[in-house]
Amino acid sequence: MAEVDKWRSFFLYGYGYPIEESLTRCPNTAAAVARIPGLNSAFFSILAPGTHIPEHRGVTKGLITCHLGLIVPRDGDVRMRVHDRVVRWAEGETLVFDDTYNHEVWNDTSGTRVVLLIQFERPCATPASGSPTCSSASSAAPPSSRTRSATSAAGTPR
Image 1: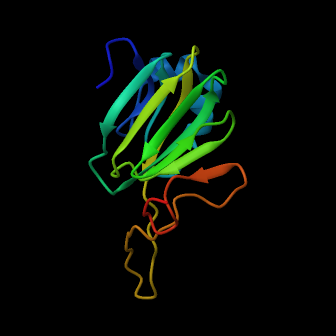
Image 2: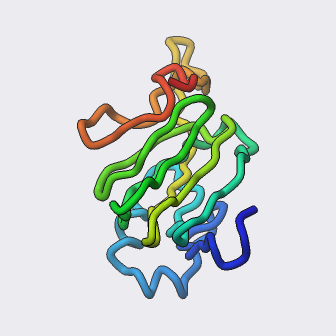
Image 3: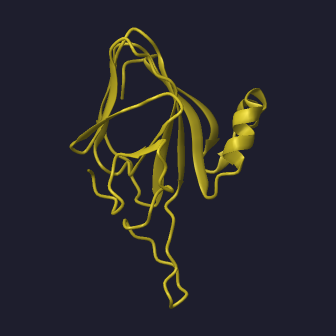
């Protein structure tokens, strides 16, 4: 998708399967992500300076994507477009979005951007009937001053 060696990933979990060697190398992160309900994938997404990841989209509404900014260069612009909204990372803050919307990423800085990318099962509501229903109206994350959503509570792009 991006040029070779411009976008790299260091997987801790992939599609629900733990990568034991990686988990051993990152014990604190491993312990934190192991507590995430419905965890599907967790990995460090490492984006080299000057890289553009072209528009793409996820394949299932069953997952929500969360990016935790770990290293976010400040000497330029590092951003992501989700549908028609542009968002920017900040260190220690999360971006939560439905990646079935078209999205693309730019790192127009001289530094490397690193985020912890987590995908987890979309929360389901259980109506009075007792049978679970999943809809795009489910909240992806509890509201927080340190969490920014690239989509509205209804799952539609802001």
